[in-house]
Length: 271
Image 1 (tube, rainbow, N blue to C red):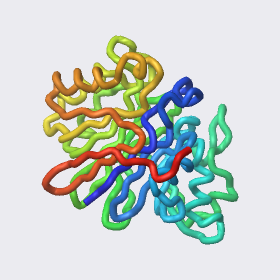
Image 2 (cartoon, rainbow, N blue to C red):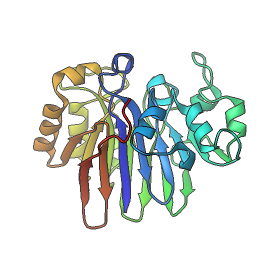
Image 3 (cartoon, rainbow, N blue to C red):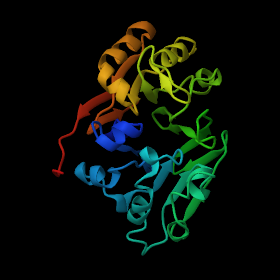
Image 4 (cartoon, rainbow, N blue to C red):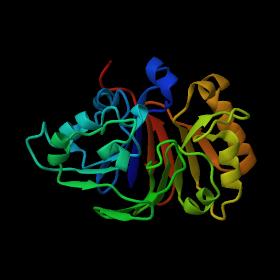
């Protein structure tokens, strides 16, 4: 069994600064405990849903944009128990670790040195995480080093598409995943560069030979938020036949061999 808990569903600068939708990323509890894209509020949201950052094993950060990496350092401090133990694994894009011409590194040398392992992988590389294997996937984004992944677990493959514009290889890369989490920032007829919109997801799913059992739409931008993402998800489902849901804070997905179950958790702590 694998569990996924969403600590938010928002993305893009305007959703991030308003927090109309939280931007805490999501958490995978498999043979290793993996936290993905700790945007603003990740630490607070994690505690709100009984996710102890001191017990996280792996931190995955797709790229060096604030809505994905803001809480990376404090989550590293959690993994290393306040930088008192050398433990934990960071898997991150080059921009997160080294910065780029527009950004400083998102994780300091002090924090990097506290980790047991740091991976800065290229697309196609595979990383063993306990009993699971993570394959790094490519993107086409304004941060050219941005990466996604496919996590192969005992109950099937989980795919994560971070910020990217549509490109033909997407449908082949994620073909055969059982659960697909996709950053769909824009609604129908409102496409922008370097991000997916509703039509892109439909094109991708329709051309897959082995479609996912379930698609979860996340990283919802301001335009998508006000266009009604639930309608957009229903449109995707009606056209493609793939069960499509919209992520929200406290959304829990339980993957078992027989099926995928869903529930919404009540927060253990108030903000």
